[in-house]
Image (cartoon, rainbow, N blue to C red; front, side, top):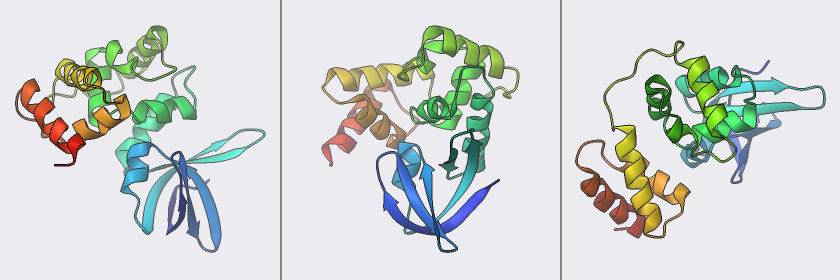
Length: 185
């Protein structure tokens, strides 16, 4: 099994990258956040997913993200594409907090993840995760996202801007800061 890859970035698309290591180009599926962090020389933690008709690689910048991905894969009904989709909506810390607090509404923001699947994720992972405290309250983050969406921004744009906003301050302050980021100021 492949556990990590260090190499040169040869190609980057919106869903995967090809990293050349030891003369071999590896096609690695990545979240949009991870794709944005790749440099010419890159190092990734890898989850190797073996099926009878395919061998797929999923890459992550850090181990906690890989470990959370693998925990999601242990939930019945969650495959690697769904797990990667879940990881693309927010940081691992916020996802852990959503699971710890039982906030299924936060998890249902992922396309393909319904209320029952979100409840199953919470049920299966809540005891496995240590309690997470601090950081931005999830409800406030959802309110800021909803405000940005109502102003005409796509959810992916709003989420990317929100990741760059400072964790302290009021919801209105976060909206203003996100708007500056989105406006390129």
